[in-house]
Image (cartoon, rainbow, N blue to C red; front, side, top):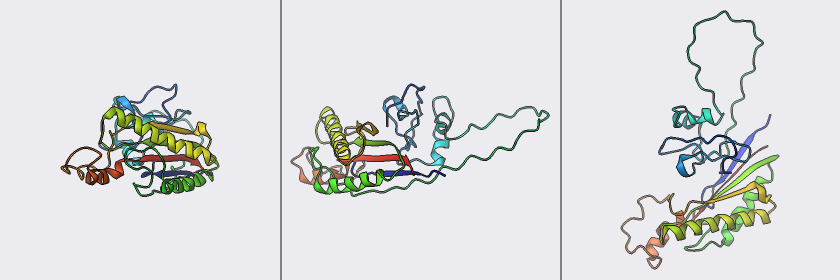
Length: 234
């Protein structure tokens, strides 16, 4: 039986939807899948919904789409509850084997400051070391479906500048993974700019909002990251 593995480098670091119909979800604090602009669920080249690091069976049942159904139903991971119908005489049918439960995902992570310095898109030696291990783990998969690299930036600077910086960081990670033997057509990159900070309110009221404020720059280190995720089976 195949066993799926999910490798996530949340600190150092979805294929865009294919020809299938777009799935639009309602806003929620936590989403089980990677969400793009317009609250659209991102998919890989095969049309599969790309799982986020928050993925769980409870979330895919509780988060609803604009159609009012669980997002897991539209992504084909769970079946919609059938509506009650009038009883009819049941014809004999052959027994159907129950669907196999989705195997648990295996996650790994490295420190948030392992990859990028302030205002830089160059990988540090520590970041390269972590990515080399990630690539080695990904290559042990019998079938590597996709590697997703999502770049982020801190809030210092203009939104437009930070968007480009986050894209450069994701591209730098892709380039290194390809040098480690990961097929380029398996690596999807995306930049989120400064829109998804992880520092929350911990870095508020620290003085001037610029790169000369070392206290602020150090506090926002966790936001300068690329989230990396590999999906495959073994």
